[in-house]
Image (cartoon, rainbow over all chains, first blue to last red; front, side, top):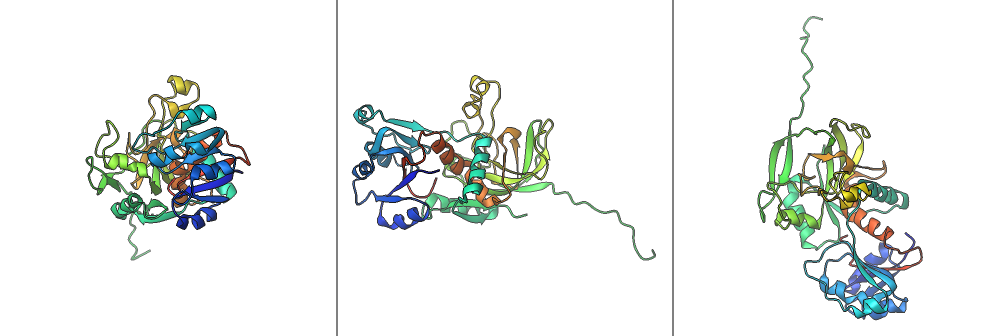
Length: 151
Length: 191
């Protein structure tokens, strides 16, 4: 989509995968001050919080640039803890996002075909649903788990 | 022709399907056989080829969605082929490759719908939560939930695009970020 993409993760082991997936930069939040590192880039226009971890999300708000948007499409179970002052001083915002219409989904599929973007998946037959669900829930693999129904 | 018995061709119509359902909050998955359902007016039946497992399927499994009715078949990352059309469904034909995601239908008449903001419908439905979803060989959905799958996208890849994919893609393209802007992604994998 033409962005300068920075992946934020905990641990150096995720860097190779993040770069393979197209990230231009990687910040290891376990070793570095994420906020300070993001500000070296002038602050992020958008931080997309895909990991539903309230503490981690709350901790990166200072990494937003002016008018930056902390965009949250997946709900952590706990509330965020946020100092409002940084929001005011940088005119920053925190926002949620809700899914899309069927046509938005079709746009997504068409974009994936156009730009050769593929999900990383692991498939299981429907009969192994319990095992498949456990695989998703364990969070051990960084794939989307997909049930297949055969013919 | 002597010796050849003129038997009528027997068409074996499949009438049963396998689904994976949850019967109570905190319950385990149960593989059960059900009658293949018929689509009502405005609905279609999909022969499911693939269905992604989303973290939010936990809402069904653990009973975290208020008012959820059991038994329930989860699954809102559906990809398959149209198998039957209900009355009044004109824009699609049997055999079309289609996907269905989290947004499971809207009423077209509430205030947000009248403004064209269908995902904010006050009576919006969620696939696999308000009605049975895609952990099944067949599923019935409202026709307005259908996305056409391009030929080059296989069903098992199309599934995750229907929730995880569209949510991130749609969020980013409405985020205000433009080409060249710095976008940080917190969390590798998952969504």
